[in-house]
Image (tube, rainbow over all chains, first blue to last red; front, side, top):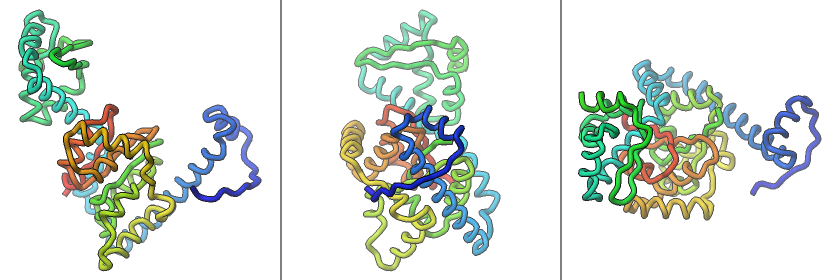
Length: 159
Length: 139
């Protein structure tokens, strides 16, 4: 842990009140410490980026497009991977899962997990579109539970 | 935005050679108020060859300096890494520590990696949703 130093600061009353409301009186120092750390890092990164742009030129548009897209969708792929794995595990490890799901579908209150699984293995993009209305899929041992079913999902999965 | 971005060795290595993907990514992170950290164990993968050590020094300096950007592996992180490894039946300990560092963050958190296969499998073993950016997909 870095050594600490006591300092006397003059800060806007409103700001200090807001921070104390959020983090409590005792956490004010760590909040400010963290804010200073982040500001120093942001300044260092900005300096580096400016220097690199001067030396190498800015990143080409093709790169910026790809990076911006991945950046804006950085949480999508994990959700897709986890759902794919979860569905796959359900069918790999639970011998009763298929019957349970088929019964659920026949009752009209379940999603087409078989279809989802197939797409999970073959079509990432298609599955991502399904994720947008992703119901809660819960796997407990030999049982697959589907909660909060969206009726539109069956139609999309079956189409 | 209060979001942590953790770099693995592939990401730090890309920054060390001024990779355009990392430059753009850092620009986005700083623009949105995110911040970057590097688990100490990543340095073990990067350092050791005198021909390249200076590059990594420069990369860490670009992020604000070693003391500011490098985070230690706490006992809690190490335990979570063990749980993740076991859950995924995998052996990539350093990758698991990187993922556990991201998973243990109390805020939104994203891993930036050059190793899609291992990290993707490890991330699936974490209960909460983590962001992942795969540099190799952006080539």
